[in-house]
Image (tube, rainbow, N blue to C red):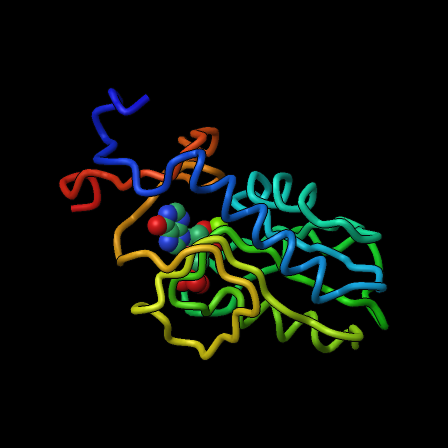
Length: 177
Ligand code: IMP
Ligand code: MG
């Protein structure tokens, strides 16, 4: 796959991802011991991470999904194009994100979810480009801090491609301009 001309190098190997996801699963299991948990992800980038992570969590877990798209005019607000199927009032909710960049998307989504009165609301992010953060964002469970490079694989895409790579790779600089 690295023969793909757009990919630069592997940042996180399948083995590194597997080990870290297992550790996160153990931390989440300990944090929510004795409670039921709703794990929510944002389509589509988070699904690969969620599907591995939820199998490392030994709790009574429900899964739910949201989808969003940016408003045509730009700006930080996003439109919810697919809402959660189930009510979250009184439930412990963990939002599972592939990557947090500026944090603006998640900031908006957390606000929308908080207004529905969950028992608790926390964030688990596989990747965090913390130097890019604009919105203040507490991340309770974090996989890896990564440098400010565009990455693909393990759910992350470039124009819809590369989500199925079993590793996370950087793109060649000339691709991003
Ligand atoms: P934020 O609102 O700036 O935090 O945007 C986060 C969203 O931007 C993520 O959910 C991804 O969809 C996308 N994104 C940010 N950085 C990357 C990247 O390096 N690769 C792929 N998608 C990215
Ligand atoms: Mg995304």
